[in-house]
Image 1: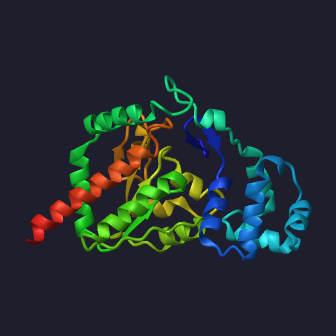
Image 2: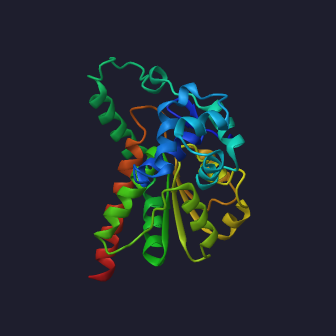
Image 3: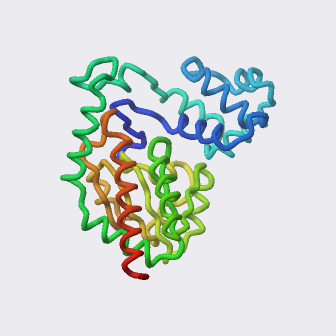
Length: 270
């Protein structure tokens, strides 16, 4: 499986995910925010840039920029430089929706079609199986990145209404730490359209063998994810690779899970 996420036909390296998560979780006055924001604002023009050039532009030392790279989950500046080379941001490709008017007027019609397709394709037996496991487990950790992070957070918030508290580590470093500290009786639920979430997360960092000892569910657009040795169960979302379907179908699936859990919890305890 490749190490790049495929989002609506556009290949992204991991760097945009890391930087966006940083600016979402840092004070705008912090050095880390300033560095991350500068790189995001100038990403298309920084391919091949030296550590000296970026550190001077951000008015920080080279050692500070190196520390930033490590905090962001990168091995060093050289890895950041390689990731900058891999970034490809193209609006025409991102928003290329076949058979749709360019101004989005037919978007809602296509969305309604996607909802109907999801209802027909969703494996509700797997949903029920997951819900029962969620009821049994005390410690549940949700994972996702970028667009797949939203359904994880939404599920976390919805589950609170059923008295179920879950954790959603957002940064790469926190995600790795959560996995390294996890126990065999914990439950992990990962939203990953490509199915490559853990492979990308552990690239150059840590040992993926730890995953083999954990209970992991993956909600994914990639049916082949079920073949990964560390994935115990999958809920596959078909046709989840277009601008219309992703992340809409993830959001809807998260809501279905929350509603199914609420009903199961109500019947069991009342």
